[in-house]
Image 1 (cartoon, rainbow, N blue to C red):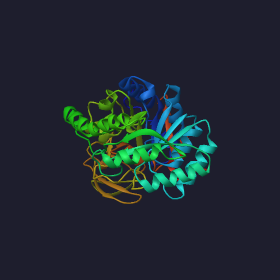
Image 2 (image 1 turned 90 degrees about the horizontal axis):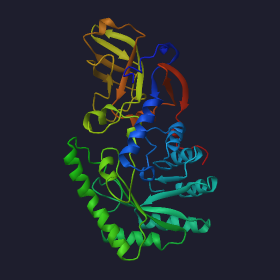
Image 3 (image 1 turned 30 degrees about the horizontal axis):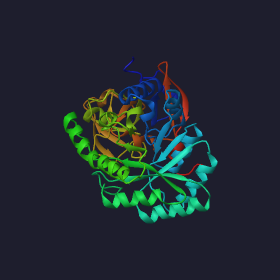
Image 4 (image 1 turned 30 degrees about the vertical axis):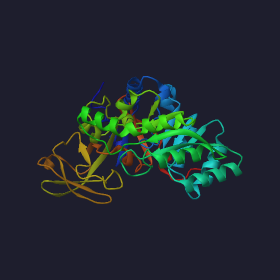
Length: 369
């Protein structure tokens, strides 16, 4: 395996900034994820990381049929690529309720589901789907510690689940739990916290079933807690970042066996001072919600970011005199998911060369629905 796969001899054919993707590495990451979970039926990868139909089809070829997404555009892209089971891990409100109906009608071969955590939203979904003479699968979204969405596992959750199960137009599909606040590097600490967060969810499932409510499955976790949930019976795992990886998780989750499959290509566009280089890698090309370093340069590792704006990234390096305007740098982003969403296409690297382009279809908010 060539660890320098990103150093392409035909870089002059690639306009910068660009995102290079190694399909072979992505495929290996998919295989590793399947090995961890042990059963493709229990892997429900999140497409928000890549937003690419080609990567969906790569999963399908490996036997993965279930997917999770964050937007209706991602759901449409995933269904159009051939997925048979798509969970919208986002509560549809306002016009999005009718968009979900349109989605189910356009792709009758795909089972769509959504999450919900609010009585009024559940009622709105039920009313709309009953009027459309359709049935929608709904997962109750459980807050297991992140306090972003969902309801705590308890009496309110049980009442909402019963509300879903008794609503015409809806079908109770199970529970959804995402503990995105757990990022501990130490595996045992992460495992303990994941177990503590999951315990009330498991208890709720037993309580619901004891009251004659069917809870077909639990969809849980993201990439950091993926191995912990893979060890649980009856749980579908929904990691996303693993397919491309990034240096954020590579540094904080060294126990996970994934390899970087996406690298940014940028160029020196100016040399403002003796030890500074200005690159065409602004906020609009690399995710900027995290502190610096937001990108680590593989062929200039000592570079330190000192200024970042919409179209420019200024770095300091004692080796600035070795670079010329137009030189290429390759960097791994700290956070790959929002970085992908900043690019209209990815450049696929194969046989050590930049080749075909894949359109990042689902970076758009609306496709046809």
